[in-house]
Length: 47
View: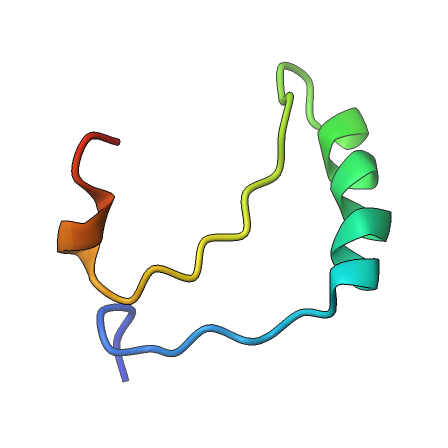
C-alpha cells in the first residue's frame, strides 16, 4: 500500500484535544495541528 491509497485512522476528539497543544508547544514556530482526512489530493486545491 502506498500513501495515495492509504486510509486515515479515526482518532477520538478527546485525544486530539489532549495532544494538539503538546505538539504545538514542542515544535518551535508551530501554531496549529491539523488532522486532515481528505481522501483525494485534488481536494487540497489552494493549499
